[in-house]
Length: 189
Image (cartoon, rainbow, N blue to C red):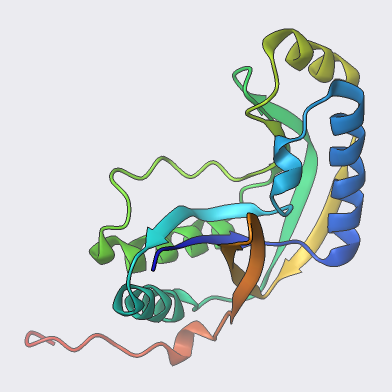
């Protein structure tokens, strides 16, 4: 048994529909389709392969332990890119988002699921992998002056599972009041 999981934020359906309209437009106009294979999401922890029931139990327990935080408003604003490889919607950084990602990374760290974790740079991918440099430049030119802004309340995060060659919603973790988080016992308190 080997399962692939992704920890992410997924905007509400109404915003996902707007994003998918943009992604479909980009795919049709620029002949790039790779991003359509994934749900519109903001990655909080990169995809990980788990190969035992016990590993999955530890993974989901760690995420449950990380699900403490106050709901917050997340803003998606305008377009940006990484190098000539990834075109995306900018995810405005805020303290709550950065803390949530840190909590998840810290909770999962003892499981040693990945090597060195890259610096968290929140974004929502619109096109990547199958986009060639000349097409990338055309895409940038097309969206250079376009504006986009949506905001939504984050009160949970999701785990998607790769099944039947697609990412499917698998589990959702509702944020719990940080004041209810159990304290770590210590000999020196």
